[in-house]
Amino acid sequence: MAERKRVAAVCYRKVGAQVEVLLVRTTLGERWTFPKGGIDPSDTSPAEAARREALEEAGVAGLIEGEALCPYRHLAVIGGGFFKEQEVVAYLLKVTGTGGAGEPGRNPKWWPLSQAYAALAENHSVVVSVEDLHRVLDAASARLERAGVEAPAAWIYDGGR
Picture 1: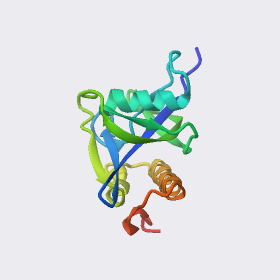
Picture 2: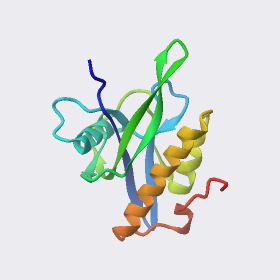
Picture 3: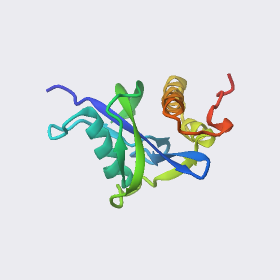
Picture 4: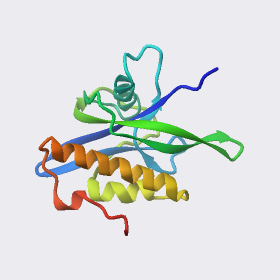
């Protein structure tokens, strides 16, 4: 049986002059991440699957871009202390409203982008995964800038580089 392809939604909104990103807790609740999951046979596209995951996990609805931001590596817990590396393709979603409660335990939270970088690194022992997550935020920043969505100077996080 083939493994389902994985997608994520990088959910954002603009509050005043500030752009914020919505993150959810991982299944086990120990880290912050983007709403993500597998593509279902009923999904009309990978972007649609990412939009559905944002609704299911975070309870938000919005406009999803059809063009992917970028792929990233995710280490999924497969049980017994073992992990499996999966590729996840991220899509940008402009949140326009709520559509439900979301999954219990996901605790969606809005973060100014400069703080979202730190939140994604919290309790993460795998540097490669953190660098990939930060690369997704960098890609979102670049896409929003090209689209003319203003972002504060704090939008760019240098990650200590």
